[in-house]
Image 1 (cartoon, rainbow, N blue to C red):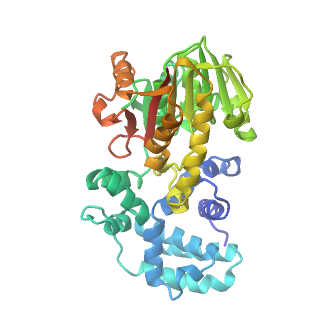
Image 2: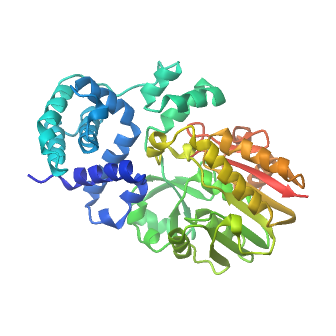
Image 3: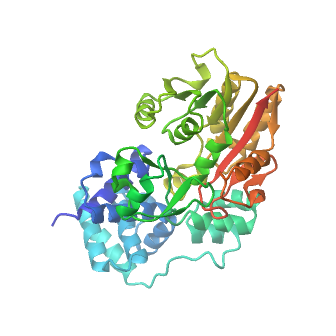
Length: 442
């Protein structure tokens, strides 16, 4: 009997993530799965993202029921076991027998027929035991919180040290649930159209011009297909607003284009150069950002073929993405502590190169979607030490200006700042974790 389309798709996505370092969100929205029915696509998303969010907890349950160490299992077998375990523990609407049967069929589909009996035995044993989804309520120590929240211990230990137990617990909890989508609507009249198509919206919690999606699927609407509305986290929108206004703007590492669109909307008369290193992402940027005042350049920021200087520069560097684990849970299983040194070196090189293109008196915004000091404060401090002609400005002043203009919906500005820096923290704020600072060339 063939495996259901949803479970087969979830299996293939999870396997590719392990084998190719792919991202679930990109695969789920790729053309390969566009023909799935709405119900099948929803189940595929639930299974793939659920397994990624709870992987360590699922592995713990599987290990208790397995006669073989997990390290000795073929990846295909382990992936099928994880899919079944997630359904058994977290999806009450799915009959256990269906979850078991289909995962055994997934093992056979993956040409691991010899392991089918083993998988069946493990899952029957697992399903016969009572299981309750883990709770962080009584978790006080790092190991307890890591186990209960299905986060790597080393990451939880870092967050406890950096943010304290209360905030660290909120961060871990936020990452274990699908985040609420936020959109930016180019034309406000489109909101009525979205409502007519069954989309329920609420005002932005952080950015006044944002809208939160309470129900409905934005990607199914005409406005989304035609580029009239864009999905963009409110923290990301806020970073773009920090850039302010200028007659010439350079946006480094600009794909996929959300921040570039905001810069173009706020600065319709400005000349904006959006730089992207990777050709395929530059093509995507060109497709998604159609404003006439935006020029897309496919180049390395560190070897930028431009001699002009700009009044405003946005440097949104590639980073670990630890502020986006609710959207990209695979990151927590992929990231290693050794990665931060390489990331910092790349980020510092990009920032210092971008600083060369800032005009005297101009302002530069450096940002990441990381929660880690190595990628944030340490990069800024090293860049300022190397270039004494730059000074750091207080983000609070820009946030207060945005508030007075009605652009900022979040009134507790103190919670958005740490020293001179902007910090949005998942769980504390209803958005991804972003870091930003404003530098000025004196």
